[in-house]
Image (tube, rainbow over all chains, first blue to last red; front, top):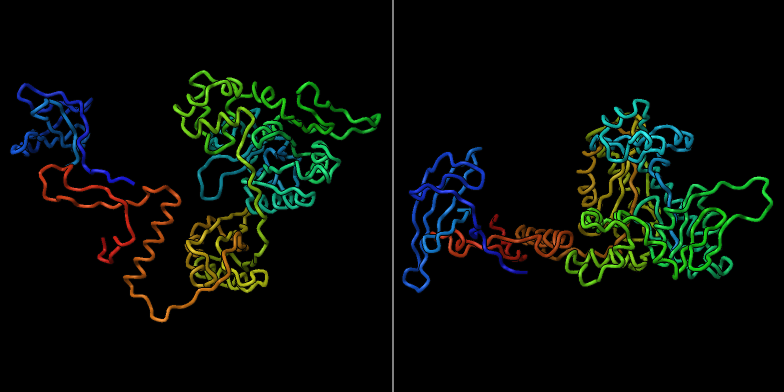
Length: 80
Length: 428
C-alpha cells in the first residue's frame, strides 16, 4: 500500500487577463478574486519555486484556488 | 460436464403462490416495501407491452393500465428455492446456487447413478424439478446456462406413439432431449456459443458492464469475442476481459457447491400490528429460542436471516452478518435491533433463522477487564479489517501531517495506511 500526497496540484485550463488575473477556469467565469499571494520557496537550491496564487469564486459559487507557475508559465488548481 | 437448472421469473412464480394462471396476463412484482418504486420480474404478457424489470411503476402502468402488481414474497421464494435444491440433492446433485432460480451441478459423478449418460442425469433432474424448469448441460457453467436459456420446455406428449422426440448429438451439434433440455458436448461448445450475443455475459455480475463496451467496439457475438487474442483482451480490460474470453471459449471457473444451511429458525405470531419496543421484545424471545435450539450444538452464530410477514400481505427478509461469530444474546440482539427499524409495514409475524454457524463458542472471559481505550482500539482494528476485506487494502487510510505549516499545500499532509495503533483513544 503506497503513501499518497494530499493537495497535489492538478493542471488547470485558465484564461487570464493581460495583468495575469484569471478570467475563467474551463467554462466557468470568475466572479471574484478575494485574495492573491505569491509563494517563493527553495530559492536557496537549484530548483527554486515561484507561484502566483489566486483564490477565486466562480459563477455558481464554487470556490477554487489556482496558481501560475512563474517559472514554466503553466496553470494549476490546488486544494489549499 | 456441468448442468444448469433455470427457472425464468422464479421470484414472480413464488409470489404468485400457486396462481400460475396469472402468468398469462400482464403481471409484475410490486416494488419492495420501502424500496425504489420500480417493478420486479414481469410476466411474458407484460413484456409484450414493453414492460421490463426495473421500470418505474408509473411508466409500467402507463404502458399497460391493466397491469397487476403482486407483492414480492422473498420468504416464500427462499423456501420454495430451498425445496428445489433439496430435491436436486435427492438425486445426488451438489448444487451451486447464488440466486434463486438458477442452480448448477456437476454431472460427471452422477452418470453412474442415472444410466451412464448426461441425458440420464438431466432426465432424473427433470423428474424432481418439474416441467417449468429449463435444463441445459455443457462443459462449463456458462455454457450450461446458455444451453438452459435456449432450452424450451416441451409439454408432455399425450397419446403419442411412444418414442420420445429428440435429437441426439450428431457431428458436434448439441443434443436436444425429448423434454427440450439441451446437452452441448465438448466438441460443440465453440460452435454453440459463437452466435450468441455478448450480452449473455451479464449473467456474471463481475462482467455486467463489459457487454456494452464490447458492443461499442463492434463485438456483438461470443464467437467474435472468442476470436480476439488474449493479450489484447488483458491489456484493454484486465482480469474481466480474460474471464469473458474464457467464457466465450467454453471455459469457466470451477463450481463451488455450497452446503445447504441447516434450518434452525423460529417464528412468532404477533397478536396485533406490533412496533417499537413490542417488536424488540418479540425479537428477544425469538433469539432466546433460536440460541436454545439443540441443533446449534454449542456453535456460535455468524449470520442470521430476519423475516416478517405483513398484515397486508407480502413478506420482508433481511440478512445480518455479525462482525464476529457469537453466541451472546446481547451482542446478537444489538446487531438485529437496528434492522427492525427497516420494517416497512406492520407485521403479523416475525421470524429468525440462522443462515450460517461459526466455530463452537469457547469465549473465555479475561481475568482483568480491558480498559475502554483498549476496547476501542480493538473495535477499530476489527472495523478496519472488515472494511479492507470488503473494499480492498486502501479502504482505510489516515491523514498523516508532514509539515502542517508549509506554505505549499502539497507538502502539508499525505494519505497513509491506517494501522490499528493509530486508534490511540485521543478521538482522532
